[in-house]
Image (tube, protein in one colour):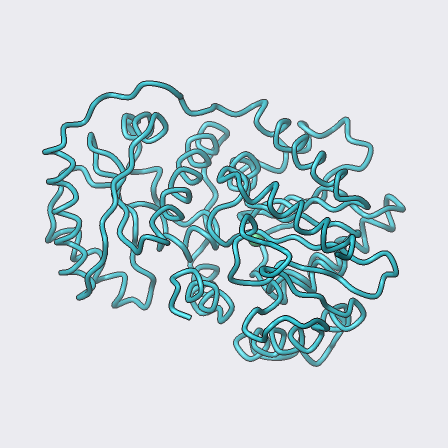
Length: 386
Ligand SMILES: [Zn+2]
């Protein structure tokens, strides 16, 4: 096997197996070949942890992927058309024997602008800062000993605009520091690590996460209070009922409970903390933050779901029922992702609130995600409705 592909599989599987680093099909990785001609990159629709020699990646001609970012005509296009065009161009850049449905990551052109090995994750530890109102100033203090300071990327719509902005910021950074940045924090999004070797990239991920965690409050582990099966069954039945009334469809209902959920449910301002969407992933995979349920009233919850659908939004898939736990609505494949997103979300919200306030996507940013063609495609694959 080509060394670049072997490295790609290693960095993907190593990081993808940890739900505190990446949830569902989120995150992506790439490795450029030694001759500088090609880039192996994660394919859209396969989770990092599931990548293998056979599936989950594409090989692109690097020059062609880079030309997408430089194309002035694409930059002029209206967003919907532009994102479709970019997907086509990235597919055209593919040069391998992989079947056509596996698109290269929607961020492939962005990876093309970075160093040889790239790991992009949505870690909850980084999320606590990139979703906090003064997160960047906290990060600057935290990483002040770094020879190459981290690069801060203000929130930008994902896809083409993000690739353009990162290319511009990296160019300016290079002028200032004569080298590319190795650590990039993306506001309301996540983390990019980019270095010249796979082992170095994995080590840097670990170091950055440890550094971020050093100032964060970790959820309590160990024994939890016992919740009676009757209470759980009643809450599940209530959400099931609300779901069918509110969405007009049927689904499976799942129950989760652990120390982090228990702790969050005890917070006085738990309801207030579940307002607004943290990241594109929270919106795409869980329909936004979990709905806080003080008392399970199926009709009231159904009304909320219906209102979301009528407004053209994705409806919520997670419900935190006070004193009972987390109820997720969705397929067997999606439910663990919804759970991981909620755990990621409550960790970030708790810590960002302690740091000075939670920073969420605004309405325009949410609308862009809701309309984003690539997200629709990713969601479709994640749902298994290929
Ligand atoms: Zn991302």
